[in-house]
Image 1 (cartoon, helix red, strand yellow):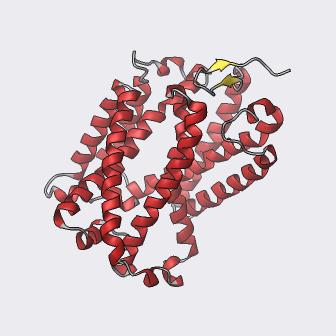
Image 2 (image 1 turned 180 degrees about the vertical axis):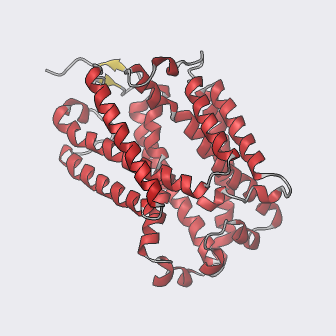
Image 3 (image 1 turned 135 degrees about the horizontal axis):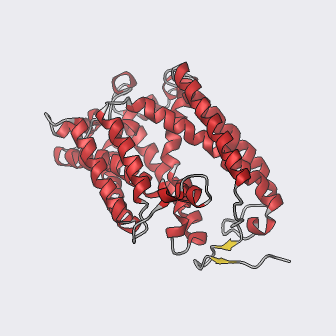
Amino acid sequence: MARLQQGNFVSLFTGMSQIFIAAVILTVLFAVNIIGTKQAAVVNTIICAVMTGAILAFAAFGLPKADFPYIFQTGHLFYKGVPNFMAALALLSFATGGASVICQLGGEAENPGRDIPLVMIISTVLVGIMYVLVALVAVGVFPIDKVADQNLTIVAFEVLPRPVYYVFVIGAALGATSSTLNAQLSWVTKPLIVACEDGLLPQSLATVTERGAAWKILTVFYVLGMGSILTGFDLGFISKLSTSVSLLQKVLVLASLWFLASKYPQCAGRTKLKIPVSLYKPWSVFGAVTAVVLASSLLASMPKQSVTLLLGLLAVSWVYACAGLKRKEIPQDLDVDYIGGDQKKKEPEK
């Protein structure tokens, strides 16, 4: 699926620069998010609907032509070895990232206490099913050697009728890129706004428009994204770097889960997604170990200089955050009642 986002859409417009198309997509979605989060959500819903239809069409036409005994041969399941299989798992973890970053949009939701857990479960299951369907067709129609490290147009051209093929290339390729980027721009400002309000970053950076768009932070990410496009920065390197950072960041979230039940038992028991308190610590350890293993599989394939720089930046960020937290008094806001959508402060339990 990573290859679904590269080359397919551009292949329909021979002679048109990939850099130009990427710059246009980034600019349009930046403008949509500047207008407001609700408008960005509407755009993402439309994009996801078109993309889902295109992917299901790919699966419907392709599955009858897939050679299932060939797919499930042991040598094909671990093509290029276990280390590369683990690296692929790490990159695919990005596909389920929406189930975690949706928390950043809790303040925008009408009933986050009920809706966010449902979105986490339903979206993860549905995305997992679609990935399996696409993967079965992608490696079951042609020999793996022919499709390895290639985008899906090779298989799509073989299994889809021509009109459906063009719908797939436009809907799935453009949709995969646009929906991911649009969602990223929608949620990425939220934790940074909190950091600004807590004094860890300049408060002026959190300036928002009347519709709640943090235009200064969005502009920073737009400049960074456009810089990567115009300089031709390696997309594979960016994917590995950003995914490994995201995985390592989750270790901090899991560390918070470890302490949640003991320090804030009233919060742990109030969640709509009922999980036995006794499982909090085992699950946090399991998740942290998994995140570190997957991140390590990606870092192992990157240049040593890049890994050293990344670990150095993480260390500097950790020291900065710890020093900043000691200087600032961060309010305890875990007693906000998000169930029912009123988001009112609950009275402490006696």
